[in-house]
Amino acid sequence: MARASSRGIAPSDPEFGRDEQRRRRLGAALGSIGSALEWYDFTLYVYLAPVLAELFFPSSDPLNALLATYGVFAAGFLMRPLGAVFFGNLGDARGRKAALSYSVVMMSIAMALIGLLPTHATIGAAAPIALVLLRLVQGFSLGGETSGTYVLMFETARPDRRGLGAALAASMASLGVMLTALLVTIMHAVLNTQQTDDYGWRILFFVGAGIGLVALIMRRRMAETPSFAAAREAGEVSALPIKRALRDHRRGIAQVFALTAYTAVVWWLAFTYVPSYLQEPIGTTPEVATLGATLAAILCALAIPFAGLLSDHVGRRPVMAAGAVLMLLFAYPVFTLLDDATAAATIAGQLILMVFVLVYTGPWAPTISELFPTATRYTGMVGYQLSMAIFGGTAPLVATLLIKITGDNLAPAFYLIGTSLLILVVLARLPETYRADAAQRGA
Image 1 (cartoon, one colour):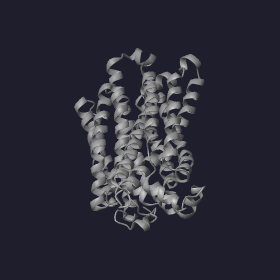
Image 2 (spheres, rainbow, N blue to C red):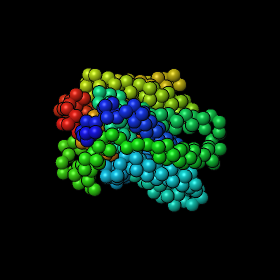
Image 3 (tube, rainbow, N blue to C red):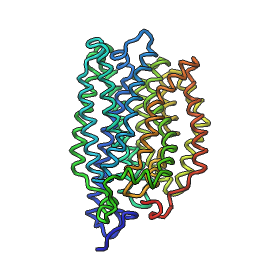
Image 4 (cartoon, rainbow, N blue to C red):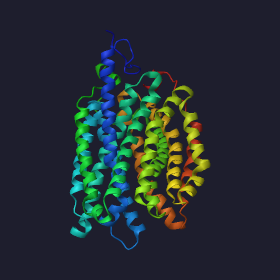
């Protein structure tokens, strides 16, 4: 059998039999399901932000307590670039499976320890300090997790369906967020405020630790992607891929950074900030806010693959631009709808906002993988994680500060409008990649 090139090999190539195709796709599916479970772990913190704010950052001003809670959320993101370097090197040197297995173990341990943490009422200032440290561990873990999942799904997909394949990774992340929102909704519906503060939030963290172990078992059944296996066989794998990526692919890293900045803002505002925003300062009940978030996550999980698939036919740039234009035109009307505070209005607003997010994010997912060759694809995602750290981790904090400074509950809409204008400028200068020669794009 002729040696397969790492720059174009796909599960559908003749050298891979049908059994091999099924085995590799099963491995990718198991890996992506593990990603959904880990996203549950990471996003649980922000869905419980109003509860954790009272327990770990007590203050006479609820908005100040919430700001402190979001500050810890942002701190977790600061570790993502370091995690991307560590796990990227591991993933490009030893394989996708090893990196993704270690990342989920780290996340599970941190989740269990958060569930055991004493609160401020018990140990004082030591409680928020311990929480910050554990969030840093989670951020480090997620820095390797999200990069690896996008790479895994991209490299396992057919060459003409890479938009769909990578978008499925984002779909799995949405399912993880949906699970978070669903369980938090159930908690608020079943437990009263005192029970939630005493033990309800802890149960959800322990659940996360448990499902993280399930994810690890799943990932033990994963196979390496055809692209990485061929690159290793061809001797293209290096011991220090981060050095190679920074030397040869600085432009690609910069492009990924810019594209991800917008994803970070719209994704984290829609998925994590809006449910808390609806409770404080809008005053919506937790049950309604998290129900809307659950429905929005379901919508994203179901629809985002179609946005990726559409980009396989018409290109990445037109679909991403459509999502940004929709956000530019309708962000303010959507936040006006959310400010109405009725159940129907808040749920409708969350669903509409999610449509704009998924239209952009679907084609963004394959684009960031198409900018690197196999041997540095995982490591090259450091641009993605650095951008997420700067713009994603601070998105809820910036939105809350805008409200505090202006006194206007609609102020976050202007953040979305401004970033939409900027990303349209970036897209105008971005080369189209969906039909580029595989050898040129390193697929």
